[in-house]
Amino acid sequence: MHLDWQIKYYPELSTNEFHDIIELRLRAFVVEQNCSYLDLDGKDKKCYHLICRDGMGNVVATARILPPGLSYPEVVIGRVVIDESIRGKGIGHTLMEEAMKFTEEEFGKVAIRISAQKHLENYYNKHAFYSTGKEYLEDGIPHVEMLFNPEI
Image 1: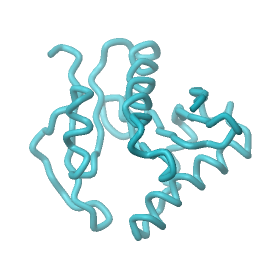
Image 2: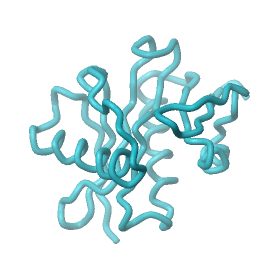
Image 3: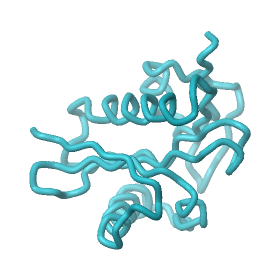
């Protein structure tokens, strides 16, 4: 399967690209997980967006990268989502590698924070993210705060 990876700062996104990103996020987080929450939190406009397209141009994976200071002192990678039709093929690992590579290129060797769904903790451990010990419910779903520390 041919995949095309791209990162764009919000103002560089076309209306159709932003629509497709939001559609994928809503399908996964709101419909699949049966979770009502306000996805459009105002932060997208200040973020970088990692977009993965399949060979037909469809957005099949995405994540947003928040610059340091927008939500936390660290860079934040969030809204990580893979289309249901292509999960289980290792694309999520490529997505995290692309996001982390961009983060280092853009911000240097910095700490990265994520708010991970608890059942994905081992997935993020494979990318050197480790729990801070803080666990909580977010929109009724168990989450764990995790950090990547380039010093380790």
